[in-house]
Image (cartoon, rainbow, N blue to C red):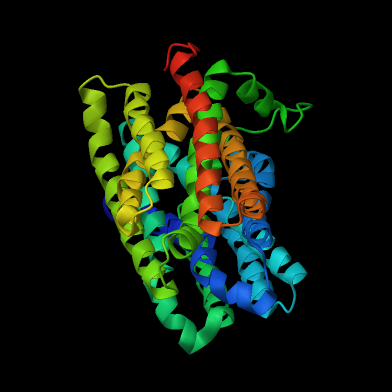
Amino acid sequence: MAHLRGLSALTVFAWFGGAYFLSYALRSINAVIAPELIARFGLSNAQLGALSSAYFLSFALMQLPLGVCLDRFGSRRTNALLLLVSACGCAVFGLAQGTGALWLGRALIGLGVAGALMSALKGYRFWYPPARQAQLAAWMLVVGTGGAMAVTVPVEMALPLVGWRGLFALAAVALTAVSLGIWLRVPRDEEQALAPPVRGQPIWSGYGEVYRSRVFWRWAIAALAMQSHFVALQSLWAGPWFTQVIGMSPSQAAGALLVFNAVLLCGFLGMGWLAPRFERRGWTVLQVVAVCGTGFIGLQAAIALVPASWAWLLWLPLGVMSTGYTLVQTHVAMSFPPALTGRAFTGFNLLIFGGIFLHQWLFGVSVDLFRAALGDTAAAFRATLLVWVGMQTVAFALLLGWRAGPRA
């Protein structure tokens, strides 16, 4: 197996990065267009959370078949074809006249971009040396955060010109273009090196080994509580928090989201630069996550308790602390043999995105329940976040205290 170099290495990263850029943009766009959707369709917080989380539900349900497809058909074919499904989802969402069609479009979008990151990480294990894997994962998250930034102020400025329906039409065109680029420009040598299926062996058999691993579950429980929650905040609830808790206008909230995602992008860049240096200095992934996780939980508690208007600034270091989990998924997947790489990545991703679906939906349900009990929207948001902080603290303590396997 010859690793890619020079322009070939850059080309592969660019096309897979383009797919993940669009995936993350579509994941996060509802945080900015939420006021438009609420005004047009009369959505409650619970309904908005359920609508936005349709992306994550279909995304999660696709993970197990995705792992099989990646291990059997390769990264290029799997990702290129799925992106066309997402393009169809954008068309359905943009043409929707009711909440049912919105939900279906959002679900198709999530299903179609379900392989955007996992196909890249699976292919990178073949095309790039082992020492670059954590760094490449961090760089992909930089690209993804760029997608989240692209749907903050730029989308707020574009809404009066093309409307939210026009934005989804443009997204459908972009997804189709990237699909063609991956199909035509990504090398096919990974597909030629795939292990043939074992006759008589069920296609789901590899997941048994993945899900029986104690190392897998040690990391997955904490990721489910913390990483899933952060993405639910970033991709939806940060926007309503800025407007309904801090009192920002929609344009001010879009600006705050832009700054938040810019800082997050810098955090991912920093983690990509620091990852190999941590390894050379003898830092384990657990030690990095322990430091970042402590800060992550503490900052959320401060965000919930500090009522001042400047408290939105606490979201900036929160984004930086969240980047510690950049290293986890690759760390877990590298604990399994190469033939199970796709299923290890997607088995972990199933839990993460299933968790995002639950966090995003239940956070809205909780806000509505607390608002009914307390009579105040801002207090309802703060109480909900404190409940989530409590759950994360328990999961984080389990991660730090559980001794499972030699690769902690």
